[in-house]
Length: 187
Image (cartoon, helix red, strand yellow):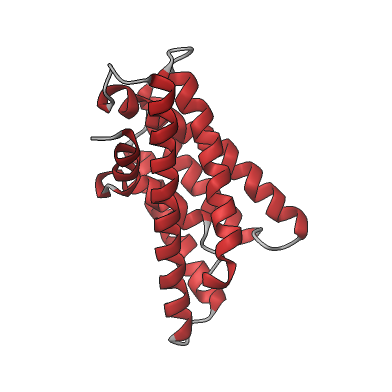
C-alpha cells in the first residue's frame, strides 16, 4: 500500500473515529458557505500533526502512548468547548482557532507516529514516505470536512437553525470526548 493511501485510509478508518470527531468539533460552526475557512482550519491541524509525526517517527522523542491516547479526546473536548463558546465571536477568535488547531495537531501527530512507524514500508524513502503519508491524511481530512459541511448545509436547509445545529454538534462532541477521556485515563 502506498504511503499516500496509508495516510488517506488511516484518517478515514472508522476505528479511528476520534480523528473524525476532532474534525467535526473543529468545523462545527461552518457550513458549505465557509468551506475555505474550514479547509484552512483543517490544514492548520495538519501542519501541527505533520511536525510531531516527523519528529516522533524519527525517534527524536517518544511520549507514553497512554498519555497521547488520553490527550486526544481532551483536545476534542477543548475544541468543542471553544467552538461552542468562542468560535466566530471576534476576528481574533479565528486566529486563535487556527493556532489551537495547529497546537492540538501536535498531540494528534504523536498518535499518528506509532501507526506510521508500524504500518509503513521500512525499505522505502522515509522523508518521501512521510510527505506522502501526510498528503494522504490531508486529502482524507478535506474529504471528511467537505462531507461534514455538506451535511451541515443539508440540515440547515431543512429548517434547523445554525445555532441549534452548532449546539447539538458541540454537545455531542463534548459528551463523546468525555466518555473517551474517562475510558483512556492513563493513571
